[in-house]
Image (cartoon, rainbow over all chains, first blue to last red; front, top):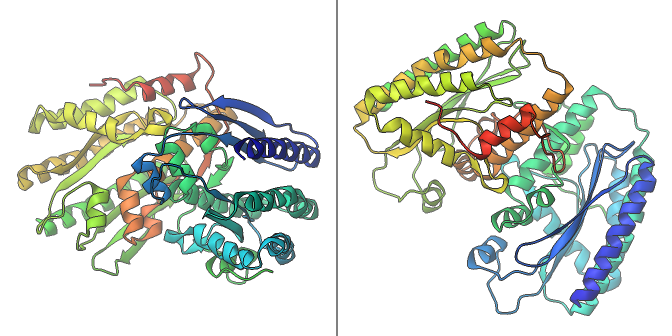
Amino acid sequence: MRHRAEAYFKALQASLCSQFESLDGKAKFKKDAWSHTEGGGGITCILERGAIIEKAGVAFSSVRAALTETMASRLGVQPQPVLAWFGGGTDLTPSYLFEEDVRHYHGRLKNICDRHNPGWYPLFKKECDEYFFIKHRGETRGVGGIFFDYRREDPEQFFLFVQNIGNDFPASYLPIVEQRRHEPWGERERTWQCIRRGRYAEFNLVYDRGTLFGLETGGRTESILMSLPPEAAWVYDHRPDTGSREEALELVLRHPREWA
Amino acid sequence: MRHRAEAYFKALQASLCSQFESLDGKAKFKKDAWSHTEGGGGITCILERGAIIEKAGVAFSSVRAALTETMASRLGVQPQPVLAWFGGGTDLTPSYLFEEDVRHYHGRLKNICDRHNPGWYPLFKKECDEYFFIKHRGETRGVGGIFFDYRREDPEQFFLFVQNIGNDFPASYLPIVEQRRHEPWGERERTWQCIRRGRYAEFNLVYDRGTLFGLETGGRTESILMSLPPEAAWVYDHRPDTGSREEALELVLRHPREWA
């Protein structure tokens, strides 16, 4: 299973990179292969300063390490002699809300979930909203998707599910970029985007289990932090104008909705 | 003592704000008074988009709250029926290294420390380098200063010391701004400054005890995060050129030096 999973994720990574390159039409991914001191390693692919894409990261890693008590407590699991679980997810973090995009994205996720287990979409959607919650802001990081962790299903069946989700990612995400790439924007939209990215950085540095686990266990810093924004901003006590498009997003982040 | 300390810090805050306003010559501080649900409160002063100063924050707060075990463990102290200690510090986080500025800054700190206790400067300087260490980067946040916490000295004597440090801040910091405000800079320097600010955000969000303590105990988010940079950047695997001025700073951050 481990070898098949590695092979699948490596192939998915290569496929995603080439699709993002085609979409952008200008920039190419920089590929960094690295190895971990305790065994295993990964390939970190980053595209920066493209024609449409400011930054994209597609990472693969496969690290085997003894699970210490500290690591287990950070992950919130009990150390066990043999520990294997599936965890993952996919979610959307836009700066502006286009409701049809969110419905399209969630709708595709629900379809795939439903084919495997009709209980999964509502469960994983809720787990996503709960996981990506920035407590000190009282808001989620984005408009959600699905998130699952420590799943103990039959590995073969769950691996199939994960592959179906992975394979569908281009069809669920790329049309949104195609649809919105010509939206006009100016200084106001850029400032708001950078403020939202500041919130993204806050979530990833304060709460994200993967980030904190990686940093604490001496993982490769550049790979762990590769999703931090190319530019972010903090403006003291910034509040969107009443009735503005910025406020429309914030309302959804404060009160997650059903999309599918 | 509490009342005298509050009075002193409020007066220092007002004095620092007016000195920063004079220095900048354009922008004014926005003053936010707030109160904490559990008692106490503060005044947060922020100056943004000035002529020389992009962002300055001068905060005062006085919060009394029962110390829970979680809070105590975050602060690294044992809960005690009566808990009182002095903690604080002052340090410099430049984007470029001007050695004479760092010597001037540390020299003034050493002078004040020496008048109180010749052991303090070396001790507090070391504590500063250790506290502001970004483990996952293998570097300090800045070029240091002094940092002290959980000091159990005679409160009257230590309060005098703290006042001497506070009163000297304008003389130790403002001349550096006057000296460097006309340094030429362009896109290269701005990018580097934003990358350094990204590291500042990493430290404050991942490690800073005050930040994490404040967020976990439901403090006022905007006040806790007011020192986050107006703009920050992350560039994948950025490394300064050999022999460059950027590398000169990084070398000092990786190997803290003696400055006084």
